Amino acid sequence: MAWKVKPSATTQIPTRKEPWLTEKMKDHYVSEIIPRYERSMGALMPILHDVQHRYNYVPYQAMIEIATLLEIHPGDVLDTVSFYEEYTTEPVGKHVIGICQSIACEVCGHQALLDHVREKLDLEPHETSDDGRFTLLAMECLGACDGAPCALLNGDRHDGLTIEKLDELIDGLP
Ligand code: FES
Image 1 (cartoon, helix red, strand yellow):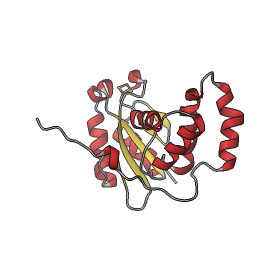
Image 2 (cartoon, helix red, strand yellow):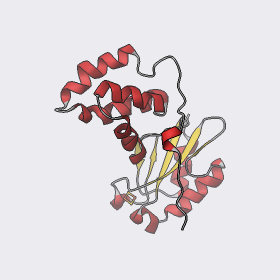
Image 3 (cartoon, helix red, strand yellow):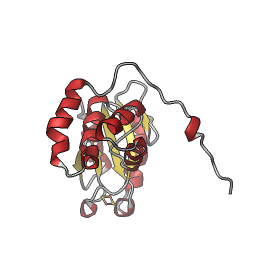
Image 4 (cartoon, protein in one colour):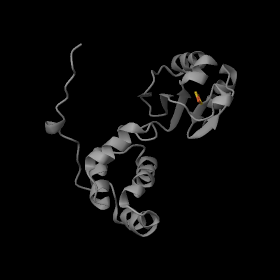
């Protein structure tokens, strides 16, 4: 087996002059979010949620800005972003369809659902359509195994899915 090495130390991240965390956002985090937690690290996930939902992703520059605000290491922010499927480092589409692929959903037919959506939207998991309308994700357990197979559509969980139900949900999206 060959190790794949990525040049993290010399990788350039895209930056822009204008900060991703506006003064208004920072004021909100400092006055409303950070005081809820004993340590500033506790505020990391709520702040990441906010950034993800505002921009449809968490830009690398924003991770550095968050680290500075919370006085934590940027690597800790990146670790959190890369661990949770909720956060993305690339913009997601207007509608995010996440099909659970963990064991209970796998046993209950997740593959048929995933294949159907792949074909219907002409997307592979973790791709976004060229028009920015859809992102397809294959996700880990959504915590609702008794309702398998499940999927998240724009953050709302739907259980006991069939191809017909999923089609109905997707076709009903604005
Ligand atoms: S395996 Fe799909 S919700 Fe748990």
